[in-house]
Image 1 (cartoon, one colour):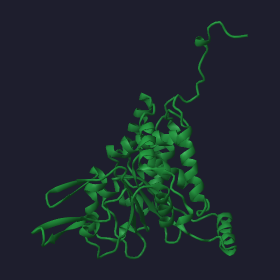
Image 2 (cartoon, rainbow, N blue to C red; image 1 turned 90 degrees about the vertical axis):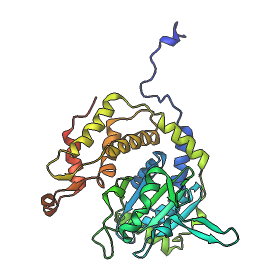
Image 3 (cartoon, helix red, strand yellow; image 1 turned 60 degrees about the vertical axis):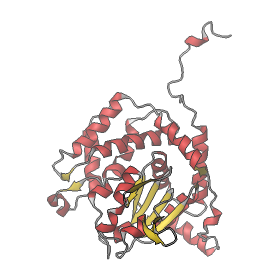
Image 4 (tube, helix red, strand yellow; image 1 turned 30 degrees about the vertical axis):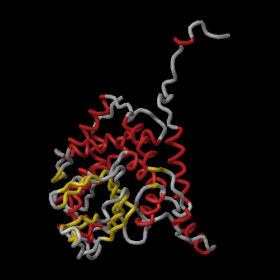
Length: 333
């Protein structure tokens, strides 16, 4: 028997008002493609996809040999956009990144030749092996998406994504990145060792002849237009006022915490907001929850805060402080 007034029936509280079927299908296809070569790392892959949907740059940190560069190359392979790779070294110059002006005799003038930064996805391998002079070449392009050379400003085409890898600063031949540059990365992600079961799976694959890292096995999934549409969908996510206040309190607490010498800037608040909207969409919701913010807090804040010398000498870590802050701020209901 039909109800007399079907329009008055309560709508399901948890039914998303936005259809995420296309977004879910595309991101699941990316997971499948990367899974052809990479074993495990599902949490890392979710954070990478979140950053791409949130239009943010990514910094991957880990010891040599944990497939940081391979993961970045595979992720770039799933996007049908121009790709370039820059290997950072101590003798690299800013012009090697941005490009240089070359004198053309037949034109009796200089012509700008773009460097490898002029691509949609730029993999910067071992970013912390180049000195501060070269790092400064990335400041403008990462934040403003423009490059200024010889008085002319060149605008980067959308999308523009920097995927950078680095070794821990304790490794030989590394430089500590400037705080202003770290702040331009949406996430800093730790790439850890595989579990014993995952490492056994890696060994079995290599032993059986399936250990190829042939990138041709990975097919492009998203074009630039597709990615632009998915990002527009993410930007339209609903965020309640109490969630915005929660984000502001979390980031604000980093500026007052006794274990921190340097707190996070408002850019961290924006990163938390944009990242949480993308994560919610990735998980099939059209609204942000406090759990989304809590899940992303370490990835957003760990590279934007500095411990006091005393806390550092005691063996403390930024992640521990972020965890304390999350536990002290009241969760909105």
